[in-house]
Amino acid sequence: MMKKSLQETPPERRLVCDGAMGTQLMLAGLESGACGEVWNLTRPERVQAIQRRYADAGADCIITNTLVEAGSC
Image 1 (spheres, rainbow, N blue to C red):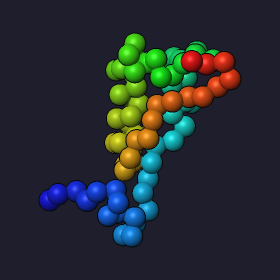
Image 2: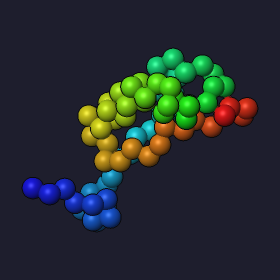
Image 3: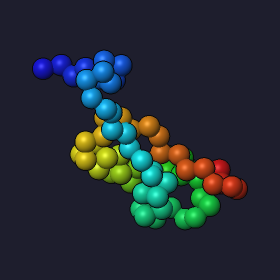
Image 4: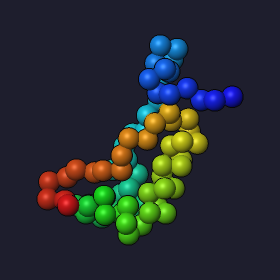
């Protein structure tokens, strides 16, 4: 069976998105004030593991792995 697009899903049920990515990055070892986006290149396995856990928990969409803090990036 083919999955419906995100645009087709909302009338039928609520979508579940990821959340608190910055918190998860810090729990995975990102230092406070560091740039989470850099982990896409330097620690992709950690980013993917976090995103996999969100997907396994039932998230319909994974938005981003950004963490915006004053002075980061």
